[in-house]
Every structure is written in C-alpha cells, then in structure tokens.
Length: 406
Image (cartoon, rainbow, N blue to C red; front, side, top):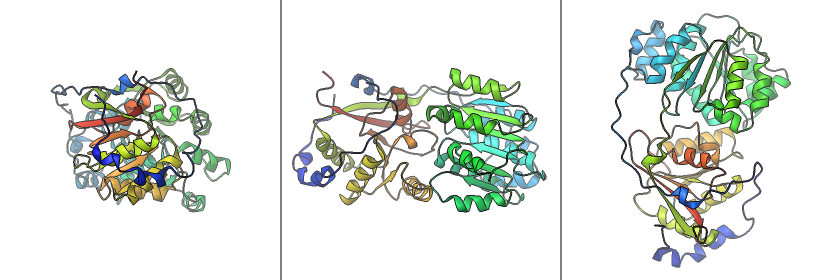
C-alpha cells in the first residue's frame, strides 16, 4: 500500500513554492533511463536467516607483519580477520595476483592494504604502489586507512582525485610518495601532463572494478594499466563479474587466485514501498512530512541531477530539517565534510546523486528514499543497500507518479 498525503502536507503549498521557482532540475547526461515497473519497488522484508559466523583460520597476530604494523593493527582494534581478509592476505603476502569478490563493508580495504604495506617497507623505488578507485570518497577512505596503518613506517601517499586543485597534488607527486591512490580521470590527466611516471609500480590495485566500468572508466583504466610494468602484482576487487571485467582480468593479471566471499544483496531484507505523488510539489510536501517523523533518524535521499539534489537539500535545510548534499559539483573537501557530518550524526539527512550509492561505508542508515527513480534496477538495489546492513532493519521508499501503478 502506498503512502498517502497526510494532514501536514495539505497546508504546505507555500513551503514548497520557493523550491519550485526557477529551473526544473538541470539536464542529465548519459544513457536513457530504463522503465522500472513500480511493483519492483515494493517488497515485504523477510527476516534474515541465521547466518553461520565465519570462522577465521587466522588471527591478525598470526600474519608475518613487522612489529610496528602489528602495533598499528592492534591500535585500530583489529583482532580477528573478516572472511576476505583471512583468505586474501596470505596470497597477497606471497606476491600472487588476486581477484577478490566481496561486498562493500566487508573489510577489503585492509585486506589489500596490510600485506602491501608490509611488502613495501624498505623499497626505495617510488612510487611503487598504485591504487585506483571509482569515486573521490572511496579513494579518500582508502588513503585515510593507509595513513592509520602506515604510521611510523616511513611510507607516504598522494591522493590524486578530481574536485580539488591540481597544484597541491603535483607538489605531493614531486615528493615521490610510495603510494598513489586516485580516481581514473585525474590519474590519466596527471599522466598526460607527465606528473606521474608508473615505471616503478610493483603493485596495482583496482578497487570496485565493476563500478569503474559502470561509470565508463574502461578506456582510462586500460591506458593507465598499459603504462605499468608487466611483472607487477595485480589485485582486482569487485562485487560482480561481468564479461568486460573478465576480459580486463585476463588482460592485466597472471594466474590470479580467485577469492569469493560475496553474499546476496540485502534488498530482500529491506522493507520497500512506493509513495504516490501527483507532481514534484507534492513529492516535496510528502518528503518533508516523512522527515518530520521521529523514526527517520538517518536518511539517505537519492535524486537524479546535481542541481536538483543541491536545491532539495537547501530547501530541507531552510525548512528546519538539517541536511547536506553530496554530488559531482562539490569539490573534494566539501564532499568529505558533508559525508562526515552525516556519518557523525550532526545532520540526519543527506541528499545525493548516485555517486554515493556504491563504495561508501555509511553505518546505521535507517531509511533510503528515492526522490527520483534510479536509471536501472541494479542502481536501485545498490541505493537501498545503504540501509539494512549488518543485521539491522532498514526501510526504502520510492516516489512514483500517482498514475504509474495502474
């Protein structure tokens, strides 16, 4: 059953008039949106089956790391590895190529960072490690974890992503960091401008490989990888295997060990429903009323365009509902600040384009609201996968036109 307009929405026309003045939302580039029947946005959550806890074969103390790295791991509070860490770390330590199939939030960043940090200690040729991620936020998260794990080891990184001035990144590259962590577009740009030389790379990581291909980065990735030595160690991490990813694996890796700890998407365990709305004004009224309810304590709202997301977030914020926006027009520091405010609970609503749908670990999201429907059903699954994680309950609402269910 769809949510209906409540009493509070009947008198809120004046509130939304300012939201609807001016532009209608901005154009969206990219493939045409696929029609998704609204019935696919409705699902009664099924209780999660009792999961058999993974029994790790190792403790972190068992891995052959140096004393400083063990100290950093212990300081982080790590004791028992997750399944991807337990299975991938021994192979990476041995120098093997690895294909890791794992969901977001399973600890895969530490799975590749820890053994790489151990193996790079004392190597003088720099930069020696290249880590490529699809989004600025994921690259920044990897860089933050690297800095924690590498304390006291004399290893340094350069974060090379779009949305921030290139001058500072050029200065960091001139310091010859051990690790380069970045996104494909800015990395390719820096290579073209001859600020990055990859001839000494001995370890290459592609994180969220499927997402990078979804975002159209395959030509950039091929160009970057072709500039690295053939005898490097190559680590691919992805949630899914597609024919394009298989070709990429086979082209750029050698005798890779495949480790799969991937579990089913969480959508069947998320309570899903549609909200019928007559038009955009009505959608804003209904959304405002929902966000006024106490149960909506950490809400991720998805919109289609950068302009529309920013305008909706500004409207909510001005209406007394603390909100931040995250989209491609924000620079890196703005996006990082918005994400931190939402994670820390200083605001309870984040309005986002699909840049936030994958690759970000945002704990305890109570609700996902699709203010605009996604491009594809796969995008929908990724969006609502931000809630109902780690055994918690979650809810997802999707706005549809009042006539579209007939």
